[in-house]
Length: 374
Image 1: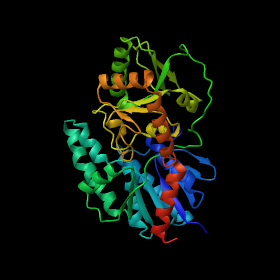
Image 2: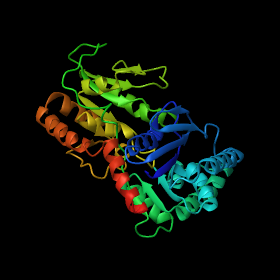
Image 3: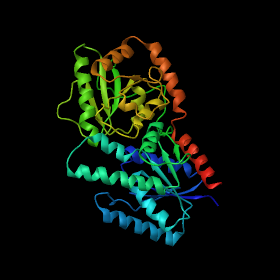
Image 4: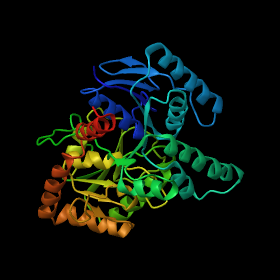
C-alpha cells in the first residue's frame, strides 16, 4: 500500500501564483503516493480535491479553527495520513494543530517564502503593521519548530529562514519551483494572428496582479515609452488576464487571457521580467521557469531573478535594473546578436529539464522516501 499524503494549500480555480506549486507537486507525486488535496476547490481526478479552506483567512482567526476542526473530523473518519504536507504559513499553522493532536503524523511545511521577510520589506508603519511584525515571526517560528521537516524554494530563502529561526542541520531542504513542461514547451513552427506588422520583434511579459501591478507596469511603460523615441521595431506583449491601465504606450499590447499561452511564448523573440526593487517577493517568479521551458533569451531585474541562484547572468539571462540598461540589451538582442540569442536559447533549454514539475516531484519523492524510510 502506498504512503498517504494530505496536502493543505491554497489551490483555487484560478490556479495562479504560488497555488501552482502544491497543485503540480501533488499531481506528479500521485504516481508513487496516495495524494489528497485539501484546498479551495472540489473535484475528483486521480488526486481528489476537497474544498475545506475557501473561507479560511488570517484575518478571521475563527475560520482557522473551523478549518482545523474539519480536518480533524476527516482524520477521525478516514484515519491518519502518513504525511501532512502544508503549504505556506497559514496551512502550516493548521498542520501544527494537527501534529499536536496526532503526533504520529509527519508534518512537512513548504515555506515558499518567509512571511516575516516579506513583511519587513514592505517598510510600512502604523499600529496594524507593528502588530503583524510581532505576530508573524511568532507564528512562523511555531511552524518551523513543530514541523518535522521544512521544504523551501531556494538557497536564499533557506538562508533567510535559518537566520530568523532555530533550524537544526538537515531539517530544511530545497525543492525549486518549475513549470509544467507538458503545457509550456518549445515549438519550432508557430502561427499566431499578429496585431502589428510581422517585422516587429515581440517582447513578452506576464501581466502582474495584485500588489505588484503598478510597480511592474510602471517600469515596463518607462522602458516602452523611451524605446519608442528610437523608432525601434520592438512590440511589447503583456500576456494574461488582470487589470489594464487606462493609458498604455502605443508599443504595448495587452492580450487579456489567452488559450494559446505556449504559442505566444514561442512566438516571442525575447522574454522579460521587470519587477523593480520595491516589488519584493520572498519567493520566486514562476514565469522565469516558463521562459526557460521555451528556451528564450531573458532580460530581467535582480528582483525578478530572486531565488534562481543556479542561473548565470550573461549565460541564462541578462540582469538589467534601469530603463537605459534594459533598452540597451533589448536593442542588442533585437538588432545585432543572433549568436548571443542562440547561445542563451541552448543554455536555457538545457536548464528547462531541471525546471519541470515532474523533475521537482521526483526530487520531493526521494526526500519523502528517505524521511519515511520507504
